[in-house]
Image (cartoon, rainbow, N blue to C red):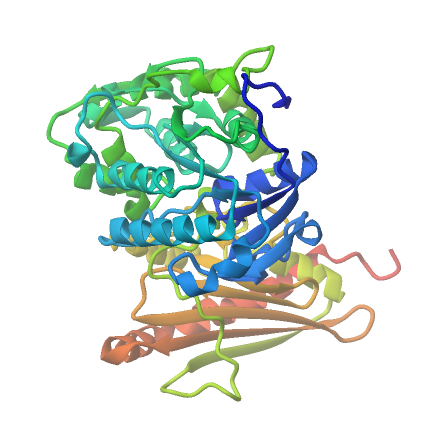
Length: 508
């Protein structure tokens, strides 16, 4: 990935960069690229624990801060040459535009005061000749954030991209599941919208090159792949790459963005809260108006990655379980950010608990292998119908349901999404704590622990905890309590049984 060449104009070689949004889809992929290019990298995160299990965690500096709390920002920006701003409030509720605006203003002010040399922002590609007021809220907010940063007094590169094709991206997952699951589709009119998709590797190449732009440069750049396609063409091209029959796509004018997002939310792992802004952004044509960035960072000798090859690479990553980050890496709106309350210090209301313990005739290592493999294709080891129904009800309520699956079929790390849970804590070989992200009248956790009991035996302990919110929360707990013996009791027994079945025979 050669980004050394650029047009006349010089830039001091940056050495220290700050990544704001390192727990997100692009940020989590950019950090190792920056490290590989020789930069010192600092990451600004609300929860530093979220980066603990990343393979590059010991090579970065982590600062705890929150872009919505300006007072926490100055230490993160001190001594930094370049700031990568990769956060947005997509899907965090109806006031996400205001949240984006406040955060961008705080970052712009802090960067200026800290003497930052450059800001790099990845935004959305806006349609031609459409007034900003008529854009989707998602694109309108991205454009406003770009304008705030360009007016900050700090030279800014605002890179504008449309659909990003890469393993784990929300746009790719939406395209993948729609195409694979629906050979015949009655679709909204936006399937005929022209789009200029870009491969995630080309996005990362441009982001890396943006750090070395001439110091005086303060402008936006459209970045896109080599092809302009309609969404219908993208689905049929995806089907061809996957050797699927050509899809029959029947556009109709009656599907509003709200209905479209509900349809996408039911068919794909992308929940309605994220699907809706993505769908709304497809109402207008999003095609690059210029390719000026190539003057400063020429395209690779082999050219930009085409759509078909980008899909092949993404699918290979999925099949090889080598997906570095996913759209669900970031916490979803309404998900609790507080960790499990520790029992001795916890106060302030009820905390319901279902506790199970099973002696297991298998080594602790084998039991842990089963525990860490929970969810996704392996399921939840008990009453599959109940889990499926709960997942469907969650999706109908606008939640994430069970379709997020796992990033990796064998290993987990803090921050991973796991169906409608998120990994809050993991102590490999001993403890896995999951925090619920389904729609609930309260907050819930599931904690699984493994303890050795000699060389060939172990003890499995399981706790389901629920902190109710109001009367509805209490009613919810007691309405599902009769099923706990089947769901949670069955889970404990089946996890133990799976560990015994997979353990080597004595003396083997």
